[in-house]
Image (cartoon, rainbow, N blue to C red; front, side):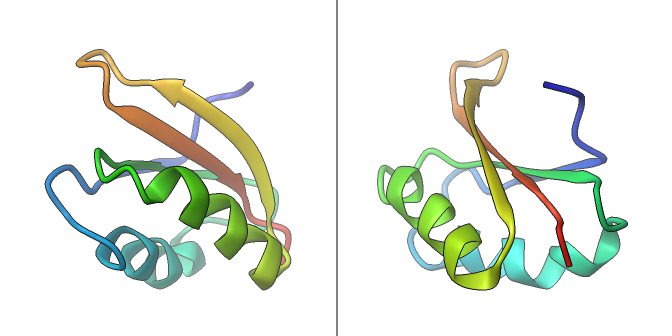
Amino acid sequence: MSEPRETLDCRGMLCPAPIIALGRSLGSVAIGDLLAVAADDPAARHDVPAWARMRGQEYLGERAAEDGVPVYVVRRLS
């Protein structure tokens, strides 16, 4: 997986704050680029893929940040 253009630091934020941040930031990356969300809220594991599906974007999966926090990666399609 290539590197995201931007990684949003949503550590400490509870649902729905990480999804709101993702939605607000999508326009900051070009179509085809990757946008990532680092979130320690357990709900993000389900919310980010669901958000991507509902918004017509591509969810690419999860990886761990250096501190072990999950990072969810989305490709902007539109």
